[in-house]
Length: 150
Length: 150
Length: 81
Length: 81
Image (cartoon, each protein chain N blue to C red):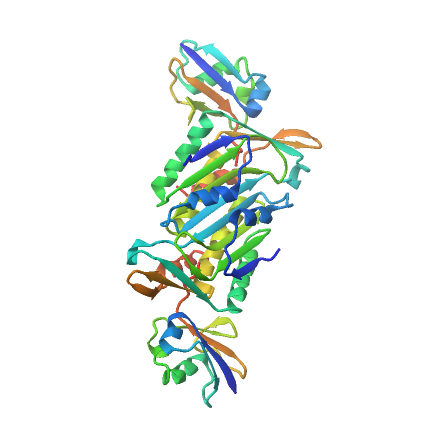
């Protein structure tokens, strides 16, 4: 099973979850996360969002994050999918799914991968609003989210 | 949308995830969990598992757990499905899905609901192994898992 | 005073009953006292490891009070999920 | 000594370039020194808030050393996920 995909196309969370646990009777837990484009009232309605990335580095950064998760928790299978290109509100951006024998490892590894992805994977979002287009600023809370994994 | 279901029938995680975020452009995050029957080598191969529950109390206990989660985190939609009856290894037992504006609330509420469900919802598992049937003992780690939410 | 009493999982199996309706004996005012009284007929209620109880579908402690018409349940620690 | 330099997102927009190939000037041995030197032509490299860099597709600090053929990238803090 391919662990990391960076793609323009949409993905099917149900199919990914099914594949993660298929034919693995030792997997008792599947934790997963789907990130979506928010309309985000803060800066006015977001009409669309374009995700730019660094081809080549992106896949490598995501693979390294998965390796780190495997070193920290007893996990079985991992799947990370991140889209790029132009996406509309409510469209899917990212999928992270992790299976393990017991739920705590699956939850922790899934959230760890999301937290690291948010600060280490080279993606950049540009929002289109009625007032124009703007690059999204990095959130300080994303840096702080890493502190708990130190 | 119905928040809690206790049912014999299987469920479709992909359809549940899609319904959780449908038509909600403020939902940026969907955290979800699927629990599966493990073959569990500890006590010999599990051939099947039968889940007994306390009809009436089960639904009420799950609804109360969801209410507590809503009091603690900024979450949008919640879905909890728990099956009963006879299930085979690798079959789905439980689904918990939570949406929120930002990922931390969705992850925390989803894991909180699973931790509380494990110790507060009246379900009991009986495993069938080649050596006979046995009721599954409660795990001390499930009680300990609650400490972090105190 | 009448109570409905339910038993689940290993407790039900050990006792050989899933439910019974009983007249609450005088002087039995708490779930803990009911457990002791029923334990005279159903030894498993006294020997079960970490027995749990609910009154009217709410988990409760042994000092929970009883009232006419209550539904009381005895069961082992839960193992769902 | 030749380097490939990449720019992304707001940094790329400000500079008006996505990539360029440069001859590494003598005396420039770190990513930080390269930033200073390129900043003479591309002011955004000096003014960008929290500029980040990668060498050969690995995030790096400003003291990271440079070698012939390296791919160096400059970009703002990432905002994926």
